[in-house]
Length: 398
Image 1 (cartoon, rainbow, N blue to C red):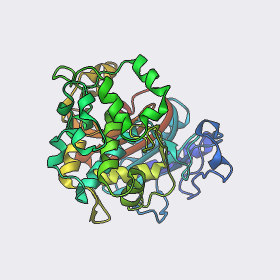
Image 2: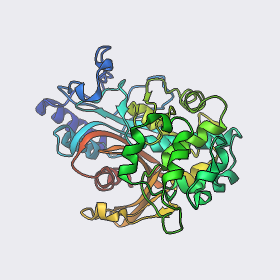
Image 3: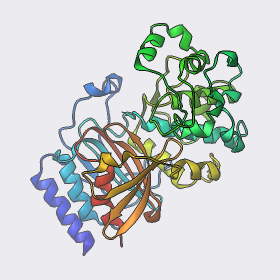
């Protein structure tokens, strides 16, 4: 009966809403060769949204299934997709759902294309975290190293010029946004006038020379604040070759991620906190890697112990005011460049962890429901977390 209801709704949507492409035809929208060379904001919008409750197998390592038959309430998700296509939740570009290891729902809107990498913004931080985990798996770092002073890995620095308290910044502190640096906006602008002083480890030297003293009081959660930059410097210092080549060979290639962009920072290293681009399906791969505690296709790419730390709440912070208008999100926190929040659905609370990028690039994991939600957005009306709690979780709760 549920399948018939979902099919009826699908047909109704297809016939009455010109903004919907027919579901299940396997013809997900693709960027043309010329479109692939454009900046993301110049990508033409789709005339029709594409919604598929039975995603095609694409030989990309992602198992697929059917929404409804393999889990989830098809009618509820299709109704949400219809609202997204109508622009009721903002300018969504893609929306995917995986359940019990299978991609069950895939949709593209506006500038979304199945083969087009989407800007990730701060979701890049979560990928940087996983690169640290990969270095540990291969023996270039250890779990014990996470509690060592970050500068102990950087051999080209001059400690005599450091501000007071630099030794308090451990890799663990940086990964949880608690490095404690104090750099003014004026100082940042002054640094950028002389890019040569920010090349390689000179970047860290400059930051640590000009920062206000590092104290217990300063080492409170402060998002950004050069923490991702310092973490990428450690990766560069400990792995063979460059961080760029290491990330490509040991993570992206391993997961079959070939269609991506990861820009280079002023330091010459990969950007650590933003400015990468991934396709929506490849975002799902990062989610699967985290959900599987660091395993990909049976191979342990990242130690389970590291992933457990990364995706669980280490720091409780006062960010709940960002969700003051939403009744279903609370108890926000931070792990190793991954966010956490409690989601209320019905009378129950579900723990979630997520990679998040500005305006709605999200990879959301709800372990209890074996659920992964991926979204890309270029203007958001409502928190993706709230939408997930309010509209997606109820479709998968039995």
